[in-house]
Length: 290
Image (cartoon, rainbow, N blue to C red; front, side, top):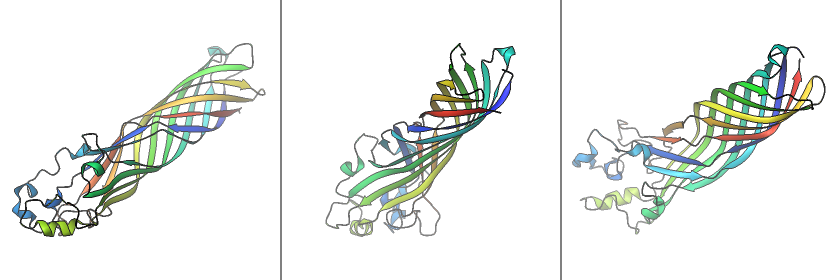
């Protein structure tokens, strides 16, 4: 067989590995929030230049692995008899979509859920992941192991770029009962005012997180020659990506706009990141020699 081009199209299952989100923001303590404590300027810590030291990893949450759907297309070139028809190279587009649709309690650095640590002031605290999608664009080199049968095992290694997105929600729900213990203003002369301003003041965000990642994969499988031009492959792929991260402003911060000052001088932004961006595919590929 001479060197030739071919087209491939694949379908299968896409597994997103268990994932740990690590999150934080540049907020200050509630007592430093002008909307909550109009007398914040009397507290030196509330006007110091450093805001929320260490808040880059102020909380975390965990999500189990989940399965979804995968599809892909490829343009390949097989090297000819000079190379024993063992080598080929492909340009691939590989898409996976997983609908997690699950929530996880927000965990404090101590390892205890925040809604337990801060109860009853904090009634609930969770992060939610909806649909997670990944589009990978790869250059892949394959080594085939031809034999006298119609079956040809192969292994491939590829590298490229991934475009990841993830539907994200976070909610910190404060008690709406003024009789519950609220610690934020404890010991301050206007403690009662702070308590009244905090009751029912939820902090929430909702966004489709997006990031561009470096990605690489290892693929193994076996092909079967259906005709002289067509072959069917059973394949498995493991994709590793760089860290994922994105952020934004809150929809509400303790029940008011996402900032600490009424004049807008100290906006508050949050950030979410994860190192657990590994995916696995299992499926079928149909190749057609041009």
